[in-house]
Every structure is written in structure tokens, then in C-alpha cells.
Length: 212
Ligand code: DC
Image (cartoon, rainbow, N blue to C red):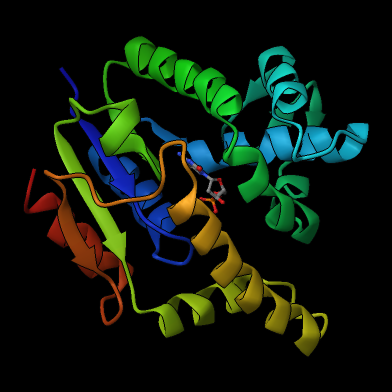
């Protein structure tokens, strides 16, 4: 049976790159649960739904057809880039704070786990809520200044202002994700904490593999 590896942590901690690399190394499927919250947020924006309206956002979540892979297919359309846009960045924490949205997405995540029998799953509540029985729980973190630097580097370099905003957005997203009532971002009791501030992706992956 394939192992289930949970990777949680804040934005800019290196979760996505590490999770993808780890999955490739181990030949396991990979699930980016942040992309699911982003997809619901994009649908809310496009349909004029208020991101603060929990029941309406949950309705969108229940109805959406979402395929995650190299490309993201949302209700039949390619949303790979759109789910990473600034407007989604700004609204996603509000959407992810609704218990009714989380309930539907957690249900889909567990369904994915049952269908694959294992894999590398990244998010904020994976080891704590979604798969408390995970074989390995990693909490990836990095110093705030380094996380801001990484997120700014990812932001479109169209203007210095865009990058400044990316840094501010990160701080406000972290704070909303960590202080919400429903499944806040926290270190699961039995997680191994890896600080990636001074580590390369390859070094983080080796560190994680050493615990498997
Ligand atoms: O990992 P990311 O930046 O793509 O996540 C986008 C947002 O979704 C982030 O604000 C936190 C939220 N999220 C969550 O609440 N639970 C998860 N399992 C994954 C993401």
C-alpha cells in the first residue's frame, strides 16, 4: 500500500515545489488542495458571488467539476493561470474560512485519498483534519522575510507595486488562515517541522525522505 504523506504550512514555505518533487521521486500521485479552494474562489468572482457568503460559495463548490493535473480544468475550461491570479489571491482566504466550503472540499479530498490509496497531499489542514491517519506529516515553514521574498518572486514582475502587494497579501492571508475558527493552519501534534529558510528544495526533499 502506498504511503500517504501530508504536507502543511503557510504560503511561501515551499510546500508546492516540495510536494511535487516528492511525489515524482516516490512515484506517488500529488494533490494540491489549495488549488481546490482557489477554484471555488475563481467561480465566486466570475459569478459575482460575494466571497463572504458561505452558503453560496459552498453551492459553487458542490456543483463544480474540477480536474487537477498539469492543467486545471474547471467546469470544462482551462483555469490553470486564472486560479493563481491576484484577485484570487486576495479573496481565497475568505472563501476558505467557510465551514460549509471546507466540508465539501474535505469530502472530495478524502474521496481522492480513498481512490488512490496514498499520495502526497499538500494544504493547511491535511495532517490535522483531512488525513489524521497519514503515514507521515510534515509541517513546512520558513522565516517570514524569506516567505515574502519567495511569494514576491512568483508575482508577475509587471510593477514593483505588484510585488509590494504580494508581500502584504501574504501577511494578511497567513493571518486569516491561522486565526479562522474552521480548521485554522496549525502544526499537527505528530508532525515533523522542517524549516526551509536556508535549505534548497533538494535538501528539504532529502530531509522528508529520511523520515519515511
Ligand atoms: O496553498 P495555496 O496558497 O494555494 O492556498 C490557497 C488558500 O487556500 C490559502 O489562503 C489557504 C487555503 N487553504 C486551506 O484553507 N486549506 C487547505 N487545505 C489548502 C488551502
